[in-house]
Image (tube, helix red, strand yellow):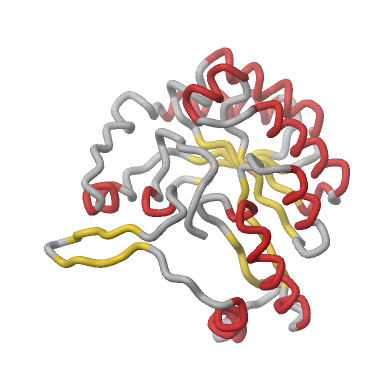
Length: 232
């Protein structure tokens, strides 16, 4: 889904930050990022892959911030549920709580990002309201079976894994200790997309040290969390 409520410095999907269509040039070829599908047509396209879904597979919505499109997606969700399709969402939860509440009826599995918790830094770096995030997180974790949630933490050396933020992350995680955690390293797979939009991308310099991620992983493991590393 195109459009996001945040602007994380490490984002690998710059084409999905803005809600409107964007022109790009890649390898000398012009194109447009963004295509609108009527809900019925989108579901038709999604169901073409149904034969490949095994063991409870289905459709995952990501972005950008998928839940910021709840007015559109609610129609899509209803059509998918009529076809008995499992639905997952990747979300940073920086949306109004009404959007979260409306999603509960349809979403089977939530993949929730944990990023910068400090209120001031969250606003300055991500453009988000950490109080809104924590409220939505608490709401979801009190309404959804914890086996249907996974926390995902991007390991950004100067931001998410900065010492103060690590302590704040641990404080949040300690409230939901039975929820699975996935750490993932940064990558430069979005570089060509930044280039296609003529946006300078300098983030990776100094922002990933595997040793720091491993220290965080080992701490969480020793404290009894169900944690793994997803290397990209």
